[in-house]
Length: 510
Image (cartoon, rainbow, N blue to C red):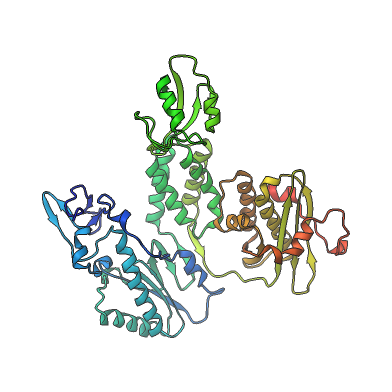
């Protein structure tokens, strides 16, 4: 019953412009850390809606519907012997809830299991073609307009039969539906970011741009909003890299240490120069990292031990990950200004209709050793003609960047061979390098050279109306592209007229 007697539980009882909500922070009492969740549920994103959109506006129009459950977490009843775990105190009084509250780790898990069951039953009842997603307690559905009234009626009757309370004021049906912050138009299959969301992000950007040092919570908030925004505009993801770099740029604190404290620091440091335990000093908590001692930059314990202690005091620089501020570099500030310019001058409307898929095979590979690297790949069209590049160079440690560069070469070749005045096209591509594949999917990388190639790769897609869908292929199945990447002095199996040499200088410069 220790949680019942805990008197430091934080509460949030009111929200600006919205109805009050009781939020209990169960992490203070230790309930959250002690809860073991057997599995995790992935919530749908706006990309999932885009993945179900047609490639053209159908002749039979569609419409959407959304249903919100009222106080979803409080639909889950707590066992009698576990109710004390979510109890809290307020002004000297103790409160015990019979239902799960908003804020407990177990609440979302138990509700997700119930929501999943309701979701599957809904699919079973609405047996004709439809779309259906659930984000926690917020459902979104898409129906053909000719059958939508019947299907929505069946859906609502199902929820009423199982006595699930519906928040009627949040429900909607029509050509346009607002769901998880996005305005979805089923008549044109477009998604728009509402003006109030844009203004909120612009105000936050303007506030952060004025500071050279920003609070960690503010920086994490703006990164989270922009990451959510780029769910549809993935080609803008490289603009997030400087912001993530700023999140890792922890300010240094300069402290004068005595010989006794210096000895304690050496004993407490790990091989990377990070403190493995707290010292009897406020500036040296556990996990802090020493970056400089005197005039010497520090990156390991061995370097730290070689620093001479000459005077009575030695000045050291230390980084504490719990520091509440982060430094903004000129590159980070420029990225923030770029985001502000984009959001203030560009309509945030995205066409989510699926780009037609080209039925071809495009595989690429790269190799690198100490003094040479090679790129190879081929495109196989339905006519079974193959074209491939083969280049030499260096930079063995950057094999992921070379693999992505090989994919970029294939994309450039495909762009030259498809018509210009056309709809956006999806190019299926294969790579046996997980790093290049992951960078292409995420749209950003903290590795500098890989990030530069990725920036050019995504910008080329944007300017040429192409979408590169890079999927993984086992290395043993990518033998032809691997052989082409290593083709140097050997005789080419293809005639010269079928070979292409992509202009690498132009591609990377663009």
